[in-house]
Image 1 (spheres, one colour):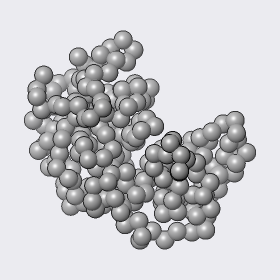
Image 2 (cartoon, helix red, strand yellow):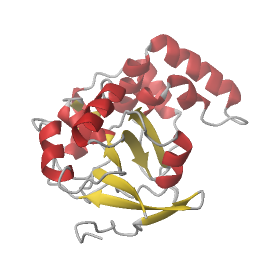
Image 3 (cartoon, helix red, strand yellow):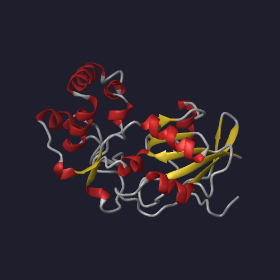
Image 4 (cartoon, helix red, strand yellow):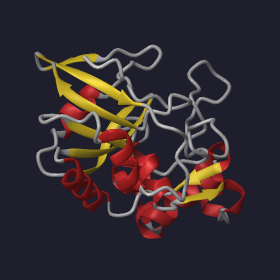
Length: 236
């Protein structure tokens, strides 16, 4: 196997799903900036290492950066509803279970509201209030994956992105199809964190959602200074 592929700290290259062994091959890049052109990045970093039979995974954060879908946290104009809903988010701040504020900040919740729309947010909040004890997660189920993918601030600590919020990517299925056409392999735009992963956009031939969640359960791309926003899934 090419020495180009080195697992991120605390991660393994191999993952077994339904009896099949896969290699999860991270592709390291420089810090990607809002003026970067995604097709050029793919040409530079991915095309030299991609092989027939691979599936290409790309972090939705990089799609958002290239689309200009980021905004300084202090530039978000928050509403009373955003401040109220953010105060209800359980992020376990101050406990060993704390992993980040997530949508428990007013700017993040404001962007969630803008992505999902006020009627949908109000409906989801009402249902969640009644079902929270026996059906946790109803709020995010009802607002949809696009709104759920909003981050504030971005989960990187790399400057300057530690001060930026991230909206949802635009037209993720279309972007995934365009990438697949360029690379010649199925493509998935994925939102992954310490809690797991889910797809935001897929091209034809991409794995099922169940397989994606199993393959990326430990987030092999990392969330910090790893700078591996691209990775390949290859059967071993």
